[in-house]
Length: 334
Ligand SMILES: CC(C)(COP(=O)(O)OP(=O)(O)OC[C@H]1O[C@@H](n2cnc3c(N)ncnc32)[C@H](O)[C@@H]1OP(=O)(O)O)[C@@H](O)C(=O)NCCC(=O)NCCS
Figure 1: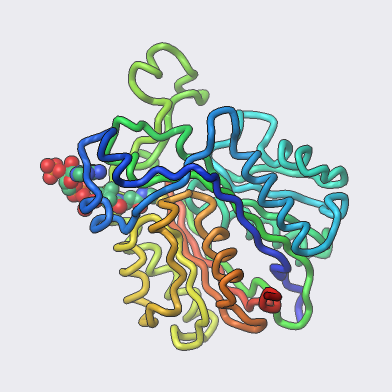
Figure 2: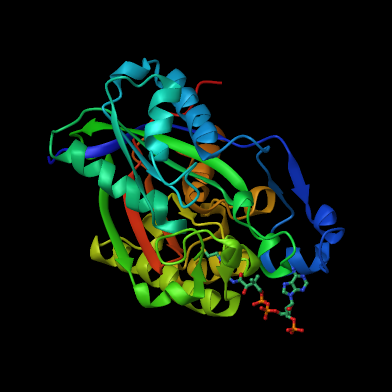
């Protein structure tokens, strides 16, 4: 059997502070009912000022190492999916490497917005499959509150902060990542972007006056794209591998909007009890949603060794994709 990258630990970190729909009612012209029915979100978590994506990522990685019972010096590579790096450079991966004491690891970031975790996972898996590395950490994390305009009701109700991580190790018994399908379409850049502060529009009084240091989203266009693409890519990867929705134990979709998840679930023809949903508590945490939902599913005992698991995502860029795997961890001990 071919060597596959198996997830051997999964963990997450969520900041304590909660921002509810009722809190947002006091900040912008919105209401709890609108947010819940249009998105499925009740609350989201917000990281304190002075802390950044690497702080959340480092906490998730420390828990990961504890769960697996290994020291940080055993990590060989850290790949981080994020669009809210602490700073342009060094990479958030480098900062996490230092914060956890992974003295033997190299590290880098992958920018694919909400698809960041699946893109980073595919990258990390290649180093395991090739035999180059035996222990690779993949992190998905975003401090979305740092780029959200809390005066814009179109976007501020959607996003939250979190980070989550998985450890990849080689397996030769069919467990682990079996396949992935990832896509990019840069023509979608105009619908979901943060244009200020980059080399096109370096930070200036003008970029700040234009709110270009905040995320911009054309919600309707993103919705249309997401409903179609996430469902399509999830169905395609199953068909390609000769599986149907019936074979799935768990579907872990990107948590951006409950109505987008519904469309994918209908297309796959699976029961709702096979779908991991936690958007109500966290909102859209961008690169963190899938590993965060996976970590909670694992902790809740929803997964057993050998179960077929499907991830699917879409995000800014546009980017979208799906990953199919055979779960390779025993249930957590109680
Ligand atoms: C953003 C989103 C929730 C908006 O939902 P929607 O049902 O499409 O709503 P619309 O954009 O049609 O807006 C309907 C009305 O609600 C208003 N509205 C928007 N945000 C609102 C809010 N927070 N509270 C109350 N009303 C709001 C709009 O201004 C609009 O009013 P109008 O008809 O007077 O112009 C939805 O488009 C969406 O989820 N898009 C995808 C976002 C996403 O997944 N992003 C992450 C990408 S990874």
